[in-house]
Amino acid sequence: MRIGFIGAGKVGTALGIYFHERGYPISGYLSHSRDHAALSARAAGASVFNDYMDIASHSDILFLTVPDASIREVAGELAASADDLTSKWIIHTSGAYSSSVFPDLCGACGFSLHPAMAISDPYKAAGDFSSTIFTIEGAPDGAALFFREAGLNVLPIASKDKAIYHLACAVSSNFVVALFSWATDLLSQAGFGAEDARRILTPIFISNARSVAEKGPVAALTGPVERADKDTVGKHLSCLSDPSDRQLYRLLSEKLIRLAEKKNPSRRYDDLEESLWH
Ligand SMILES: NC(=O)c1ccc[n+]([C@@H]2O[C@H](COP(=O)([O-])OP(=O)(O)OC[C@H]3O[C@@H](n4cnc5c(N)ncnc54)[C@H](OP(=O)(O)O)[C@@H]3O)[C@@H](O)[C@H]2O)c1
Image 1 (cartoon, protein in one colour):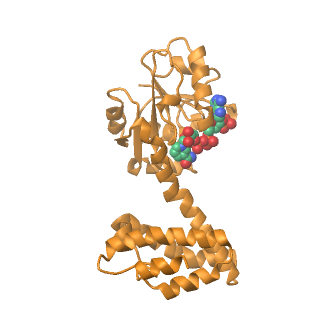
Image 2: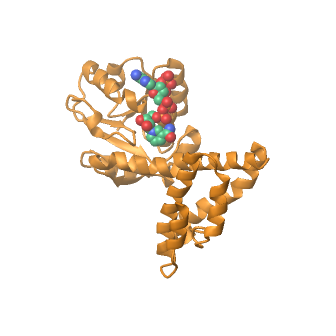
Image 3: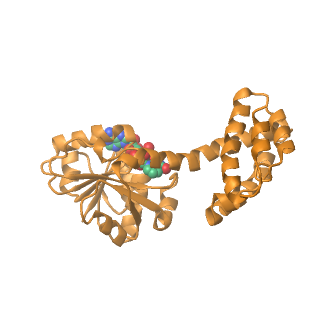
């Protein structure tokens, strides 16, 4: 099965390196920029293609690793210009979109395969893929097995669940970035520069992430909300002058109270919850 890539960005390059290192034949890359296609092709021991017909005729599996907003258009152009796509696999790697984003693919099987990972460095990502979960959706028989045999951890997902699945991924990664940034801003109000703030917060952040990953959120939960310490929660609220920050603190604390009730079923959180909103 020769594997080709339309889109020589982070994900396309990482997948090309991964499959190349495991001995799978990589046909090559087609991208907006020929220079980017050439760099990725070199990393994956492959060729550069200039047109859809050429890359399609040299590939049995074609990854469309282009931005989400371009998947439909690129797939449409591919279907319109390729000679014969019958029984080829056309795969996009979007987390939010399902295979229904594909137009008619002229006999090809279109499906999605999403690495549940934030990818900024293709070489590092290729090394991490064997411990990453890939969700597969809309795939023909044999596709999940093919990728498992290539060493990937593949889990099926239904088309209707892709948006909520992607939301979960975003909450656990992007939203954490927003919270870290908020904490940095609060430390700047206490006179700490950005570098000192990062040095203060990083050990807390890393050890907490490790604890949540190893034990789960209920067992990992600590802090004033978990202890039902309404005086400290009151002090926190008095530091927040922006009404939207106060609201965010309250709403996140509500989520923590639900977890704390599971952790400490005999502890009462009614007073704390009442004081949060008054
Ligand atoms: N990065 C992540 O963390 C991550 C994780 C999981 C899934 N994904 C998904 O993976 C897909 C690719 O994301 P990415 O992060 O790899 O994006 P990216 O780094 O921005 O790469 C996208 C590539 O597509 C090329 N491209 C754009 N329009 C094109 C067109 N019409 N024809 C040919 N090539 C075109 C770009 O071309 P040039 O470079 O040649 O200009 C670029 O190299 C997206 O669906 C994304 O949602 C990303």
